[in-house]
Amino acid sequence: MYLTTTRPDMMFVTCLISRYMTKPTKIHLQAAKRALRYLKGTVNYGIHYKKGGDGELLAFTDSDYAGDMEDRKSTSGYVFLMNSSAVSWCSKKQPIVTLSTTEAEFVAAAVCACQGVWIKRILKELGQFDGGCTTVMCDNSSTIKLSKNPVMHGRSKHIDVRFHFLRNLTKEGVIELVHCGSQDQVADIMTKPLKLDVFQKLRKLLGFRVPNNPYPLSLVLLSLTHTLYCSSQRFSKQELEHEAFYYGMESKL
Image 1: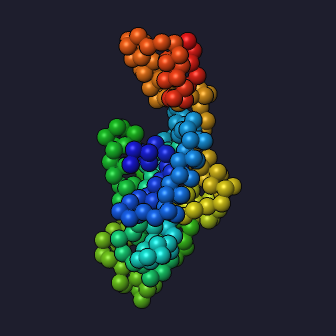
Image 2: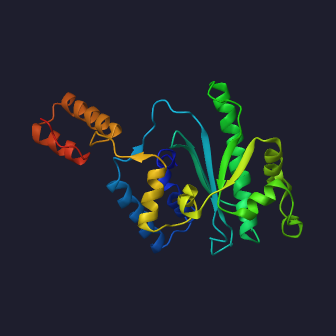
């Protein structure tokens, strides 16, 4: 839970593995170990927030279709960017079984729209919101048409009423769905496993950078605090070096 608050690139795999916490198997443990190895190799990565900028809020929404092989439910995902850096993201299995890709994308877009309304309220309280329309990028043309008017009534009449909240927001000009190509869909990283080159491309679009400091600040503070504690206990120099190495930092004694 704490990992996904700072690492959107780990959001999908963390939520996927957590579905099998009650009864994990060997393959689930292997997936968890692989995720930890990736995390260890990218421990210095972080989201880079630029100073200034226009402060425009841009959202990406996406969904797979019947990705869960057990109950055939889809996975919704969205990412909100501000100044080309991620500020809010989510990857969650949908509560209903959808009958088409259009319905799955429509449900994901409705969830994204609700989050967008909440973020706009927060920005308004902070004095950073200009009252404009929030653009939501979607790679499904049928979903965009369905959000504007019920052109496919026969295929959408069974969708729950709560998800048609998106159509109301679109009509009022609060949300605007805009089509984008699948190769530029940043929210893909929240809904499905990707190839390495595509994953690295989308991770960069989230605003991930490697800081100049070779060690993350949290690790530096942890090592410094632990070293001071060991010094207060009057440990030997060899013991201090061993403790510093245990926390991944070279001893400077």
